Every structure is written in structure tokens, then in C-alpha cells.
Length: 135
Length: 487
View 1: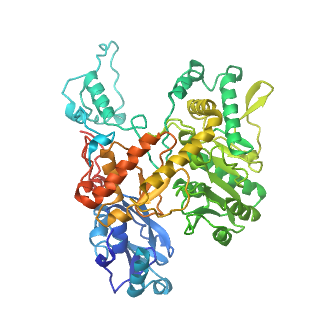
View 2: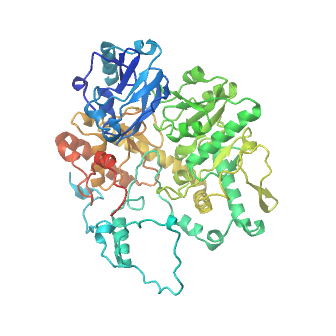
View 3: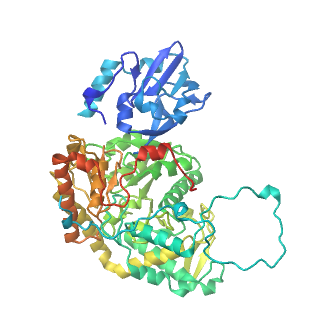
């Protein structure tokens, strides 16, 4: 697990309490897990994603991340319909570890409104949240 | 670390290749007689390319598996403090009793008059389980702990259906065993997680907050997976019952309570036993197992069938139970396991209480011995197991996994690691009553030495085990590039 000072935070994404990040472009929200989560999980060996067309519920599990330590839920921070999934993760689950905010994104959701997204933490609030967890 | 102090050491161990590497074309194990009937071709649609099996002689195969078995580690070899698993020694008398021809050679389709001994044994084991828990009735049908759980939740489901209104949720503390939410979900209930307080237990307030008339009940492991007794259990049960719910007791940790705690008085409506843990039947390798359930008056009508009935001196199987959840399997599960369980309760007798006492004492002895060497996230009083983590060693980059691997070098099976999930980097130690003080001292000494090494020579700890035939596998590579067939 990474020390707090080594964690990478992005200011152009929003964060959930369960350590997913989300980035909104129009009514499409791209979701991934953040640097804290990938570090805590360890080497990811399998990613189970939702199917395109699935309906996902905010803060509910819609897939899973399997590391050598454990299988953890992958949550969607927003409600809506899945319109794309990162198929590269099927052969290269390690992208979640090596590039959590970029090539390791997990899925995209079409949302009806921005209510769920707006309720997520901005980077400063999230940094405080993680710092508190460490203590 | 001077290895000579610990049971783990070097000896003449044999290298052993994969069977495919041992093979020589044309070698065979046995010669089968020449074919003396005309060949009959199989339909082409039924045939395909043959798997590539290695050509081996009998002695090749025997040496292969015998050598591999010499690399193995079991509770017959040494201390096996795998937390949550209760790896107690399985007395060999249980094996002798289970092998008696009268038990080993019977068949479930024999007439009842020929099965009286087997039925009596089952009846008496049920009575022992009831005595140990204070409950009203039992079923030995479930063939594993997880099926016992499923049986319990199916009964709770049947109870609510019978009352006329099914419910949709089941409360589940975050210290629940992993199969609990799965059992609830299989019966159509949505698990509702409940967090612990800082003392590592569930509070009545937390339960009051989530319990409502759409919640079927709670699944509670007591002591919980932190080894801590849920001291509010009676009040929690009352809250659940007041709203029409039922209490499922996960009996996985009965080794901490056996003979001491009246489960009925805790307000539990149904509880399962893991006989392979608490009652010392063989463990591991996926079975065979047994997961009997005991219930109170409320759930008795819903027990699986058939039930063993006693009338005078005669025993029979009774199917007459209109509200039953039905059969859980054909016949009666892994009967020989039940024989071993009864052999254990009868050879132990009143000393079952002593086993509980020593199991708790041993865990607390280790807790006291390692306090200060490893971080103790929940220092509260605990029972049959103790959970440390790697917070102290992490400062030098040494993790729980490294500590576990180094312990193998010392000749001890590692504790359970990274479980329960509520503790980051958990090292979950459950010595059971099996270990003597001398053996516990050896284990404590090894753990202390590892803590010291983690400070003075962390790189060494990270590069272990070194005494085993196979060193640390690359778990990530193995999982990412799975090879599932030999060739």
C-alpha cells in the first residue's frame, strides 16, 4: 500500500468514498478506481465489468476486482446505463495498477442528470478523506 | 535467526518433477490382457483428440505422490494456527470407529430394521448437539457448514412465508463469515451490512437503526471473526424478535463456546455446526463434511426431512412434516463424518468444556506473548483467536504476507492472512486446544524473532521461505497467466 505522500490525486475528476473516480463529459460519466484503491488492492489479476446496456445504481456494486489478496466490489458512483466498458482490461488487468486514471478506466455510464456526480467529492475534500483513513 | 530452535529444519527431501517430465514413451503401469472380443467403433461424434497423458510405470506414480506428500504440512506434522478454521487435531480413534464394518459397509437403502445402529448414532449425536447448545431440535442433513447456513436461511424464509408475508432483507455485521451474505442472497434476501463499534462488536443501537418489518432477521457469528464475544447478543436478539425477525447464529466459532454458552438463551433461533472444526472431524481438501443445524421451538416444524425419530427402543426416519423445507440431499450426507463427530463428543464427554477453556487460554497466551511485537488493532478481551496486523512491520516494508512466509521457514503453518477484511493486513491466529505450552512458546519465539528480523534485516524476510522445496511463487504472474493443463 502506498504512503499518503506517494499517492497520485487528479484535480479533474471527482471521487467516491469507495475510491472510484469519475469524470463527466456531457451526459457520459467515465469511471475508474483511483490510485489509493489500486495500491490497497495490490496486483489486480482479473476485472469483472458490467455489460454494455446494464443499468447501474449509484454506490452499488456492478462488477468486481480480483487481486492476489481478495476480490473486491467495483461500485458505480452514478446511476444510469452502461454505454462502454474498457475491453483492454480483459487481457491486461494490470492497467488498473499502472494507469488507474487513464488506460485503466473501467466503464462509462450515461446519466439522466448530474445529481449523483455532483454529490461526489472534489479532490481537496477527497484528500482530507484519505488522510483521515490513514490516521 | 538461529533455525535450530524451531521445528522447521533441513532434512533429506526429494526433488520431484511434474509427471509429464517423469514420463517415458511406452511406459505403462499395468499390462491388461489381450483383447479377445471384436472391436466396436465408437460413434465419431463421441470421439475427439485424446488428452496428452504421461506414460508412467506404477513405481513412477507411487514415488511421485509419495515424494510430494513428504513436502506437505498438516496438523499431524505441526502447529496449524489458521485463524477461523479451528485446525484442531483429529484423534485417530475417530478413524478406527468410523472404519468399523457395521458403519462402513451399510447402505441407505437397507431396511430400517438393519440400520438401527446407524439411526441410533444419529439420534444420539443430535441429542449431544442439543445438550451443547440448549436448543430444541436438530438435523444432521446439511453436508457442510455453508449448506447448514443455507438450511438455516431456508427455514427462516419458510417461516416468513408461513406467517403470510415474506421479507426482503437480512442484517449482516461486517465481521460475518464470507458465506453468510451468499446464503442470504441465495434465498432472495438483500444483505444489509452493519458496522462494528470501536470495541469490535455490533451495538443494539446499530441494529435498531436498520431492523424493520421488511427484514427477515440477522446472521450473527459469535464470537465474531475478531474473536470477540458479541456481548449485546441478547439485546440484539430481542430487537430482531420484536420486529418479527429471526436470529441465525453462525456456529463456525463454537470452539470458543462449547459447553459454556447456552445458545438458546442468547436468543438464537437456528445455529449450524462445523463438525470439522468444533468436533474434530477431518478438515480441508474440500470435504467430506457435515454442517448439522440446531433450532428452537419456532423453527422446529421447518427442519429438513427425513428426521430421526425414537419410539421406545426403535429408531426410524420420519418424513411427516408438512412445513419442512424438504430434503437437502439424497440420503443422509456424509454419514462416516457423523460417526467421527459422535466418537469425539463421547470420548471427550464433560471434557469438552476443558477443550473450550484451553482453546481460549492458548489464544490469549499467544496474544500476551506477541503484544508489543505486533500491532493489536482490537486489544479488547478476545476468546479463541487473536488478530494482529503488520502496522509495525510495514514501516520497514515488511508485510503480513512476508511474515507468514517467514514462519514457514520456522516449521509452523502460517496463520490466516488478510482476513477478516475489517482489519487491514490481518494476521489471524487460532492455536486451538491442541497445542501444548511448549509448542506455543516455540511459536511465540519464532514470531518474535521474525518481528526482530523485520527491523534488522527486512530484505531477508521479504525473500522467504528459504527452507521449503518450492520458494515463494509469483502469485500475480500465476494468476494472470494461468496454466491449467499438463503437457
